[in-house]
Length: 329
Image (cartoon, rainbow, N blue to C red):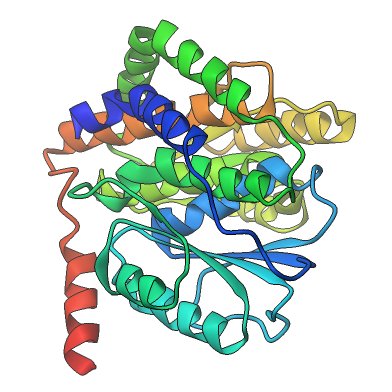
């Protein structure tokens, strides 16, 4: 896992080079909405992209993490189906529903039944590298999803230069990022982590949660401002458990009220826990800051796994669930 995380900027560069040479079939009908479906880290690609492009699209974009698609998916929907293995049960069923609803489908996968079915239907497939944990391919899936939107002229955003700036930023700060991650892992190794951030960085908080779950075998939860100011903050009132460690993902916002809410929230929870850790994003844009925090989060999960003495690659409970489901079918 060490080499996988270390190669994040290199992998980003490789997929950028790849999409520059990629062409897709033209769409035959006008697109009125976009749906990105997938589970786990494959599905997270859609959530990340949605947060980056929500103010750059003229049509709705939604994400789906379920067996079923919404009933509005039809011949005017661009459906992007993401499954690393190509055998994800929920995603295959959603893909089949997309076929039934005559959606315009594109697939991102490393193989499996999904690739086979897509090729039989003449559907474009963007390939993922084989023999990796699905969570290690977030670099490929986010670039490929953005490329699909850009290629089909649904997104008027030259995003590749921002990725290249992020790559350079991460490379220049690699040692510092790893050192900070190891320090954070030391502070939370005997605690239950809680991740807080502002709404535009919710997908990054999900990434940190997923990585702590899978790599570190660690339960945790996350919430976002301003929503947590309307419910979860009250839960701190009766909390005397000093075993809770709050990680604040500090992304940039120009919204004064959101900044002020974060300050007030931090002042409240300081009364109820001894461990509050702020991870400050670096970079000039939302995308660059998100990628920086994702890389920092991945290293935190790796060093926490080391300190707990667990294998960051093994995910036996996920495998157990999948095996049982396949046996049922």
